[in-house]
Image 1 (cartoon, protein in one colour):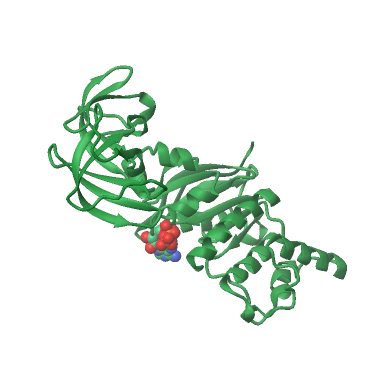
Image 2: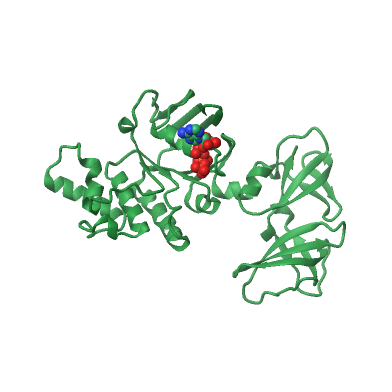
Length: 360
Ligand code: ATP
């Protein structure tokens, strides 16, 4: 795979604010790539820099090995889909989709065939004459997508395109967008603050904080092997515990008052440390509750201190008998599950292989 988009040491300042702070990224051709991060982390600015709507203060952006320095947005092999659809209300579906073709010399039948192909791609076949005002939010975004795709850009840039849609429709469109991207084979770069959206749709995700990229990884690696505590807590929930490092050999030997002594392999640990402290992270679903009344070697005892019911899962806050340490556990409400009440005794065990460690 070749790197189609290369972002090299890009800095972008707005007066006193450094929105993008020395970002470098490599995005492969045909990849679904997401820029994920909290509000204000600079992800939209980075997308707009790739589109050419903003100019970097320093650094360079290359598409297909060609520097985009000084290249106007309309001359770049990119197209952008915005959050608020940006379709023309006075034009019908077909006229909106055809808007990008207005400068192309095409016969009527070529034009019609391109429009119908684009509408077909986004599931709007036959709605050519429909007024834009008579479209739902999801349909408007499909029109915007068709208009962006009709020009066959090499890179499609999507700025929170689904955030105006309700949850059900958003989930449906996530899956459609993913299939559409694989069908057309175009590189997609999506900006989102929604971690679930980034995980379900992307081949690779770059997590940004304060104008910098903190980790670039596949959704699975990001979730299971976050490289920093900040990434770990931004993506899903995690229990963090401060522990002591007893020995630094091939593996790290760790000690904690509740968990006892255990080893972490090099792959489970990131960061470097000058002292002997480590923060370990445990996902709530990597802790399992034992059947009532049972106890096994290394199981941990506690009491339920809080319960949040989410339908398919229940979150329990457990206060351990030792040191009153708190653990958050998520339990699937699947067939045969056991319910607990506040104050009830509980016994649980932790999948030590799933633990990640952050040295500092
Ligand atoms: P959001 O999800 O809220 O859009 P974001 O991660 O996309 O956030 P950006 O919109 O890229 O973040 O903004 C990054 C920083 O740059 C913010 O502090 C923002 O206020 C600032 N910024 C962005 N655009 C401009 C601008 N045109 N003028 C001045 N400051 C700006």
